Amino acid sequence: MSKPEDRVANAATAAANTLSAAERIEERAERVKQATSDAVDRTKDAVDRAADKVESGLHTATDKAAHGATRAAEKAEEAKLRGKEAYDDAVDRANDWLDVARDYVREKPVQSIAMAIAAGWLAGRIFRN
Image (cartoon, rainbow, N blue to C red; front, side, top):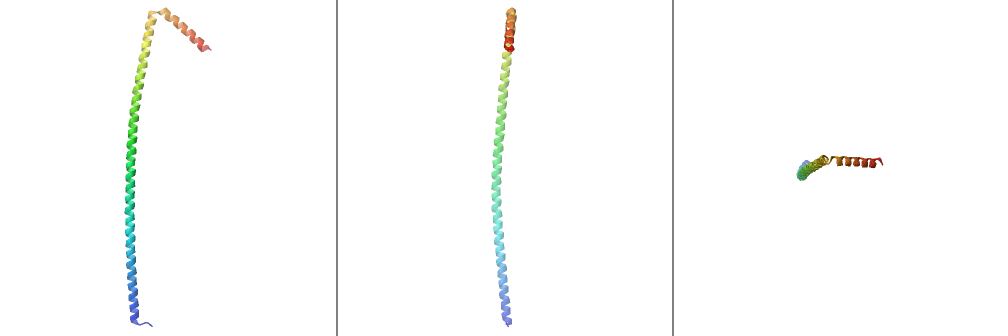
């Protein structure tokens, strides 16, 4: 049998081992906690950098789209003005031709009637075939 002193010594050794194991577990838990915290911080930084890049890219894309839309609107306005000018010029020319035709008919009514009959006859021949 074992002596009471041996049992006490064994119990003390077991207690010391248990305390030592608890300290090691606590130490490892602290290291895991620190590693996790570091990983979370690194991940947060990476996500923040990615978000900044995305935000910057969106701002750039939005600015380019707005600039493109503005330029398109300006070009459309220029085309509209050119079209209006061309229309106004065509109307002015048509009015000038009508004035010339009216003056010709007033000055030479017989020739005008003869030309109208000839033009009608020619148009009838062209469209009949």
